[in-house]
Length: 120
Image (cartoon, rainbow, N blue to C red; front, side):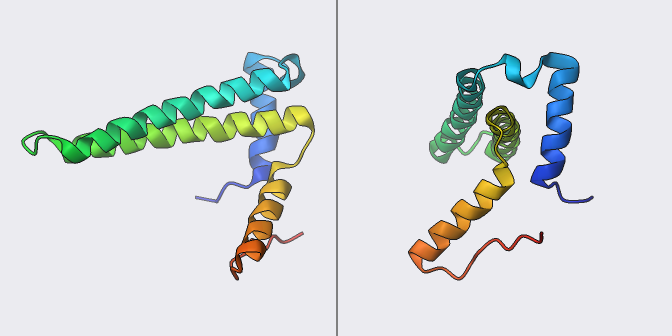
């Protein structure tokens, strides 16, 4: 399976949004940010449930529950990224460019040699 790029996500994400939901520009940046925040809240709720398992009765099938909660969290994080990309599209910014720059800026500031090198 090929790895997803920001460019691939943007192209198909906007097309799908406008095909089956609504034009990207019909929602304000506030609308997109609120949708993104909602997904973040849902991911946090799954993480809260995962944390509760640390003190769970060992007779429960906690390993199954842990895997289920991690799966649910991953799906909520995926929703969050999809909404973040649509917000970036609405604002007319290249999210991949800004993620790369921010990552490298923090690496430099913290003295890390780890950077994102993106081919043009």
